[in-house]
Image (cartoon, rainbow over all chains, first blue to last red; front, side):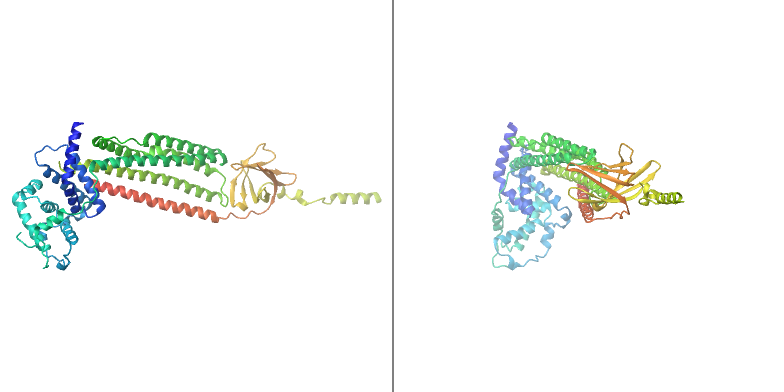
Length: 174
Length: 201
Length: 171
């Protein structure tokens, strides 16, 4: 089963390199800890099976993030079908007033919680861009993974930087 | 504005430094689920066998003490139904060894999920129908027997009829419950198959 | 004259009834009607009744175990057919009733492993059947409750199946 060994080796390498990122991504899509665990397992299983068909036309990183995002989006859609129209785009979030008490922004844990709330409120496409940005992918890589044009990606990155700056009181140029 | 502005890069650092949960890798999950299914099969096999043996003992006694040929025949049929049930359990529900190798394990688990689903769907044939037939004879025998102490004949018939309806209702419930379980197994199969589709590859 | 007087005295004496009037009572010669009595068995006494009627097919009847609350247990004709005999079947022993034309009453016996228990019945009214005893009420309530619970379970399972089908159709 040479094919099976190749697939196994590729998977082990991908899991070692991108495992933590998959968990962070799952955490951003699913708030419930038990369901998050299920989602992580689904992503790993989908990755393992999909690597059998990986033909090298894109980078392993792009392939991995695409698979993970697709599985996570399906997971969310299955469980929150009725709430899809309550998700917001980056534009909506950028225009909306904060409504949060600035004095409550204290501590790393609270920051992460507020960030997660913000991410989970985004529509799938914008959520994907946000997560890839937080994983420190550049605009070109984000464009490759999402399939959006580089111009569209640049606009979205600009918006999300301003949101992060305003919501989390960041200084410095966007 | 806060007195402690957070530089942009720190958000990314904070994001990447999130604590990791314990993660089970995908293929290992399949192996674990496959083993769990086989263990569950073994547990069901043992429980149901003991239940059937108890039934055989009870109705064996009933054959001796129940009055009337119809009641005795019904008790005998119950024993036959219980023996048939145990035989079907050993043939159909017997647990199997989980193979090594991730791909073989996945195929095995998939086939076992299908087998479990089909068992639940077909439960009326091998688990319910024999007992319904035997139970009908028992209740017919009870219907023609002398009324119980404290009842006139028609009240006795009302209670026996109610008992027969209750028996049929119980079997309908068991059948529907197994169909529900079959749907859950099918959902697991769909999830397993759907992961390829969801992966978008 | 003395012989005539003695004959008249003897004839008058012969004309006097010698015992109970039963032979002259037409009802007493008839095995039909309601008959009651007590069976003294090894561990308990059963106050029982017998209802016999005559139809086109002959004599028919039912047995009432009054103190046990069981009325209307069917009787089957036993063999030989004469004298008039009935039996109750489907019991743990044998219960038989025989019409005794000499005594003008029904006699019977209960035969079981521990022995034979004879008894006799005399004509008398049979009390009406009681509709519901405590045990019967409990049995009916228990059955009713279980049926309701199971019906709820069936309804729930049917609802879940329907919901799943709707979900799959819309997916």
